[in-house]
Length: 126
Ligand SMILES: [Zn+2]
Ligand SMILES: [Zn+2]
Ligand SMILES: [Zn+2]
Image (cartoon, rainbow, N blue to C red; front, side, top):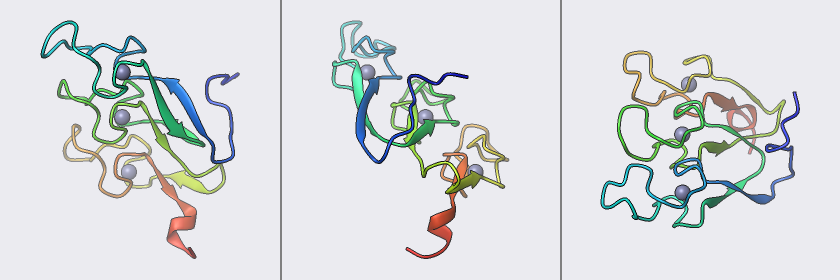
């Protein structure tokens, strides 16, 4: 399993392909016009994220809200969410990592806010 696009980092800001427009820089739904600029990356096709990060479970990394033609409310269209390093997080016991509420699939899990994991550090000392 070579995850070349998601290497472990040390809190750096890195640039990844914009998930919402898939790097095209255009609004994927063309709500205003087919030439409309992607609201997530501002037309550059790239977004900056903080490392380490995980793929957003709520939108499955697409950056698109599961039930609407909007940006994902968890990752804001980036397709990834900042996460504590491996070993400092655990799978959310509430949603089992899906990031989705039990009662409504299109609503983020309230325990992890849709991220699918819980920070172990956040539980204890700051
Ligand atoms: Zn974009
Ligand atoms: Zn998302
Ligand atoms: Zn959860």
